[in-house]
Length: 158
Length: 286
Image 1 (cartoon, rainbow over the protein chains, first blue to last red):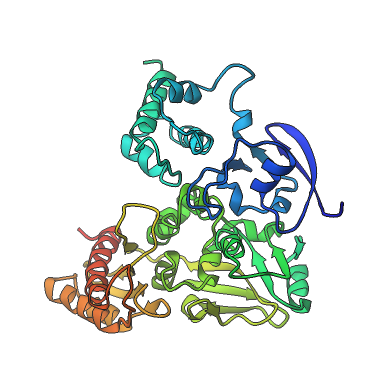
Image 2: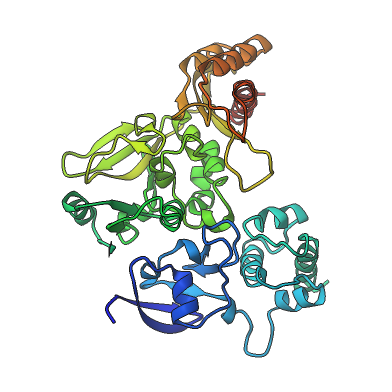
């Protein structure tokens, strides 16, 4: 198969793939690399379900071409837990039932982790604005916000 | 579709100059990929400019700041010096889309997308920003308000790339601000927007000012009459009313589901007054 040869790093592993010029990073992750954690909601950067970290920045992988990932570092939801050990945010999302159908959850977790790394002690308003790029049609957001606030508390050791 | 990722500006210009068919420049991609997805554009060629090192930087020079064409808006918000000198420009850039979009989108892209409602453009126009254009001919520097000619259209010629935006060094007692009206609190397109930049004299009187409006005409407007209304004043009530009236008069908006003509005319004046007040305070007025 012909295509653009891409060498990249995903969750710390070197990964190489061939992709077509018009293929998005989301398509590559899901359809070529079987990393199906990132979801396609809108495909136009509005819903955040496909959020990944791209060279240290939170992005919608549906708005990145697979070819753009050459030489870059990508982190996806598959790299969030340390083996069997969940990230505190993942644990709190479960405890607070901060999900129902789960489609938005990987994107929320990636965005929430980035938010906490940039601002370890966010206010409720900062959380709500910080997660405005992620849409959830089930929870009404409150449970997600509570799960995040509880994570903040726990990480501070309160 | 062909994807190219040149590592020099010269190569990028060469590729674009020789391109046949529909060629598009890719920086953040937050407009281009959406248009491709919706089949609004079908590029034959995409030239990704992110491997051109000089375009990835915000440079502080003796003359001011240069913001490279592939600098994501999020990086502008992280640049303390830029934020301090041009808070209005930075707040406008950081209103574009979500955190995810801000990690990719660029002010040059926002400009070249040529939407009348582009958030960063009124702030850049008010700031007197210049676009530096590389191309097959001579490098040229053009006022930002000369770039967009109509919705979706720019004055750039074949093979030309805006490589950066220049912002001047701020004189003492200067401030700028940007405000937009949206029916939600976040993640929406401006119904009306206003950018104001001004410099005060030692007594707190407005010495120079620029006022720009977005989403009220086919292109972002630089409203000279509005600036005149506040120059020589301390933004007293009469000056503010004149500012608002000049803004409302300058508008030639459309009626659509986002807002009516009357609403846009009225709100342009309101936002200009509020932005002027913020800019005035930032300029150090007591």
